[in-house]
Image 1: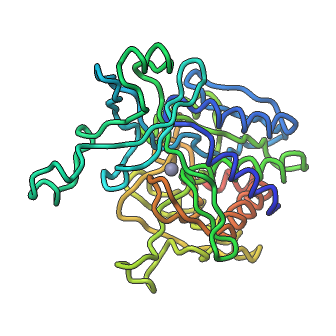
Image 2 (image 1 turned 180 degrees about the horizontal axis):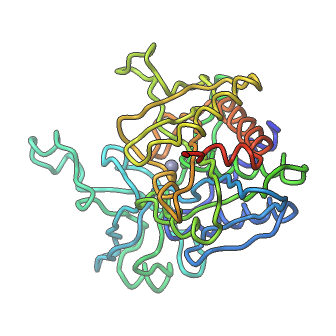
Length: 359
Ligand SMILES: [Zn+2]
């Protein structure tokens, strides 16, 4: 399971998949799960693998997209101005490598840049540069060269460039897009583990689009796939670095799979949360429970879709998400896969009915 995890995480984190342009991630998902069930997509591009089985429709879902950019304008002298798709902190942007994916599929490397500090008035040097004052230098010397020779067009997607990298500490890895390629790899691995087993449910594996733009893809995916319960897999921010009270951390690297009960997008279904915690305890899976003051996941869209769908959110805490270099402990990921698989085995008709037995 570990070797497969590493090859999947490398391929998925290095894939180019910003909101609305998740094709490379979808291709990996479809290739990996082609033998597990029937694949289909909704009108926005969210992908579902129906692994079959009888009983309630249980979905394990991750969002495919990562935070990135789109080409907004090309200046006459060949620099790209851009809009962000997903939340970026301007501190994380300058001097970072990015790749523009052209309509022809060519990848053009560039660097995020601004007026250098050497030319800025002293007061401005201390301020955070606004994103709209930044641009991307792809080495073109004119708009014509960028468009005609490089093939860049307005609206082309731009993703961060960052290599999946093992760190000195065993099982610690650095990459871009752990939010949410840990969720995509997790949905794939859970599907490979239990997709062919006899289960008391109809298992659906899903990759949603455009989560980073306000949980958009999950809405149509819910309509399309009609799940009765959803396990949302995520790569949430860790809170175990300097500045936090470490003993109060709820998202510590190495602390196990995170079970999220609350954030500003969703109050987790209490029965489902207890079911997940009880399952983790019964199976001996290390876990950490979190109540977040902010943030959101696809559960925010799923739980109010259709007639209301019970959700639980599992996560692999990742330091420095929404940047070029996030850090995870692989063991937390492996525990998330184990808990997802255990839930897929246990969520039979009685268990799923119990999640919404209000009367
Ligand atoms: Zn995410």
